[in-house]
Length: 189
Image 1 (cartoon, rainbow, N blue to C red):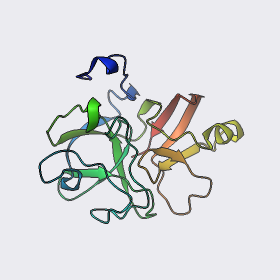
Image 2: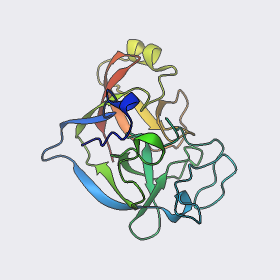
Image 3: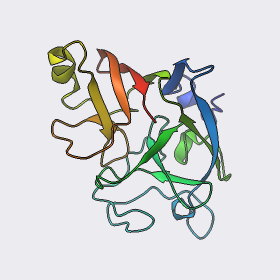
Image 4: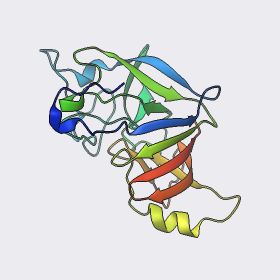
């Protein structure tokens, strides 16, 4: 349940919604990577200049100062998870973040326990801004049966369409692009 701490956010919706996940997906209990906390314990969003635990080429996408649900996560050391950098073709996606982390919408509030949705063939609805819509409308319109539109971890951590992915590992297949505000995906990790 989204815990709203500010009346201006009372109509904020959860950005990731499981549609077919009761037996296909599991919210994996992970720990927020230590690199996402300042020395005083406050949240720190991944920056473009970060090199640990992942080298980044862009800052992670944030909304109201925090990371959004639906962000692609990568497994770190032990049970930790970190926002995907999308820049490394060998980067293995671990799942999709289930919580708002940091900022005014923070679900975990000074905790380090997060949920990461995992489960091949589970279906989720992702609301904007939990995904990057750049090029997605054209790719969806041009898709042919049997050739799904593949979504990857973007450089800001959100799901994105990449025209020439090279050896990158797909995170999900696009089931439907309802609008620039909502997509339905088939999770592949």
